[in-house]
Length: 231
Image (cartoon, rainbow, N blue to C red; front, side, top):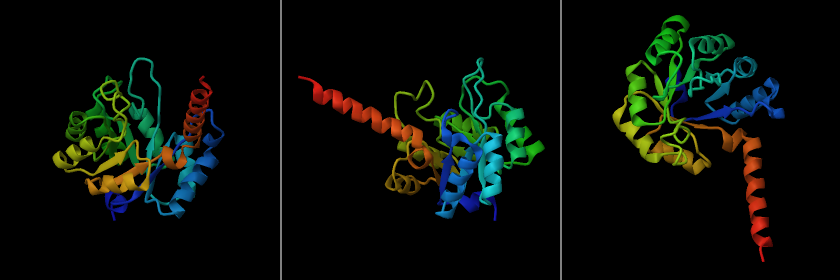
């Protein structure tokens, strides 16, 4: 069974944590991933070689691997270079996720995808923010497309994810598997993504994002307290 068939119609859990969080320890990320798989996740999405290596020892489902790298000269940060992809693959990832938006990048997208295919033998998940960037990624050889970066680029930051219209456009215009990722905050929303034609659904913050979820609760409660204290 190929990887795309393995994940079809399923839940992929993104197990990540901020670098300054106690949850960022590799063994804790691996425990999150194992818990997700034991409860039915068909795959996991993991950042950094160290975390991928730890998760690979804990689970046998497909790992979508990436390495977020902040490069001062370039806005792309999800696996921007072949060296990053090489480290992700060596750590045990089955699929390499990378930023495939139209923003400036250190290496041409087509060259990067071709090298991942030719030298690493891994499929590529293109994280995009628009139909145009998705079409360009597929033309460059991307195997899967994810809506991951909608809402996180300058041209989409005004609209919070998920974009149901973008998902529908991708499903209509592209023949590769489309993964809905970003902004999924309930099982009902995940089901809606599948109903719109998503191949699979990726959920991160709503399941594993303890740091961000706590911050959201605290900020909302503080705002409410201030509001109630006004004369």
